[in-house]
Length: 212
Image (tube, rainbow, N blue to C red; front, side):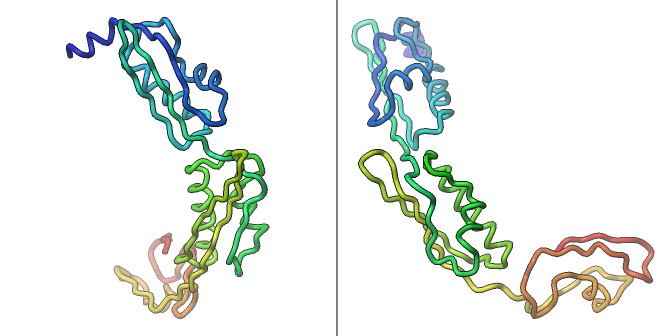
């Protein structure tokens, strides 16, 4: 508590930036930290939040030091590279590259933050899931150059499509298992896929809907 009160009596003497590519003035202005203002601890978390909104960095850290009656602030960032061309896909035998590019929405010149790459991988996995390749492995590789640009390659190991061994139905008191199974899109010994049981089953007292 004493330290916090102590910090409230300091003003910001200087804001310095450690960045390789990004304009330091842009970082300082975006952070909201201003020389001469009275320092408050909440300024640091707000500055990190502001900088994150630029979607340019994979890492942001802010250090402070006290010299005399002033606070000196150092902003350290790790810039994410820009995509130098279209994303590349290796190992995709069952889904065309064109479809993968459309799904991931990665465009030349966009910033390849860790979050952007993770989102793209998730979309690729979802597309393979729709094709019943639920156990597909996706590994990303970034090849940087000297101008903060990079190639992005996704190495894909397609799994084996899953088949349904047996369908077990519980709680069916009004209908036989075979009658329910005939109404299902998924079939025993067939490939697993999304399916709905959404038709009337004659002989019952109500219309039931279910999702497998």
